[in-house]
Image (cartoon, rainbow, N blue to C red; front, side, top):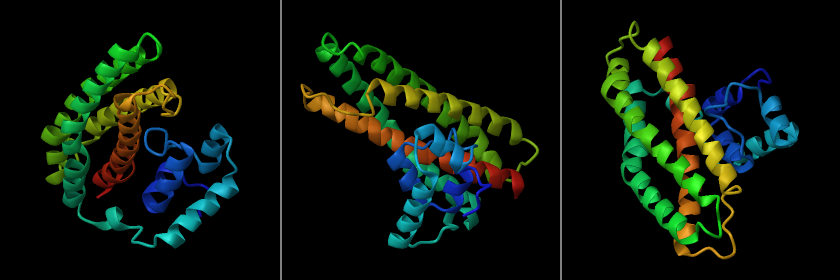
Length: 220
């Protein structure tokens, strides 16, 4: 394992590491520009143990580590849109509805639910226009190889990814790491479970763009 690699590069080159990063709350997408040692220090983790877990994960689930590093960019874009963009069209309104309901019913006993609702609304409001700009402007430009145009919109998308990463971190903090309170009803549990799944999906989504799609589009 190359010790000079950033966490984002490691996630791109060794996909099995993504599962380990999720397990330990290591940001490999928006905050993926630091070394594994630095990321582990921030989380109070033993770097050697994390490296061992990555190796173990690769041994349990051998696969093609270069899958998205070598396949055509058009296939990667189609995968991002189908696997991450389109599911959000349904999932974001569902989570917004749950967040509103849970804040209304349980807000008096759980004051953190109102800022949680506001964070969910802000994330949804950011994601809609963000995905539209990618699908209507950036992705088509990458598809036709317009390398003179794409650097600026890529920079804008990366800045917006950082904002989303901050919102996700805030949501994780407000939910106490998505730990459901003892007095939670079914909707409360569904909200926290859905937000945790959303965090994982968005981390993978942003990782594919920041660490694989955008570098390849600028390079190839």
